[in-house]
Amino acid sequence: MKITRMPSAAGTAAIVLALAGCWDDNDTNDVPVLPPPPPVTTVPDSAGVSGAAFISFIMTLSGSDETSEPLTIRDTFAVPPDEGNEPTPLT
Image (cartoon, rainbow, N blue to C red):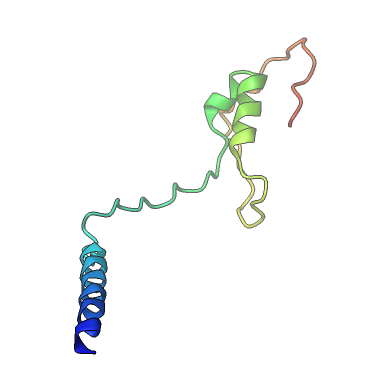
């Protein structure tokens, strides 16, 4: 009876040792987590170059952010020139 338990115990010990070798408690190899970018609080001057630039800036904003303060527009912001084309749809 002891002979049949020996291979079972050896197999169990091999599995435990193999799995123990896969576990690494060293966190120095992890990729560092970057802090989130600061929230956008003003409309950049580059958004005033054209209507398309303004639309692309608006599309980068999160549509589900209900907690941030409203964006401010600087006094030096250049309003996009009037374009004779149809308005760009916001999709």
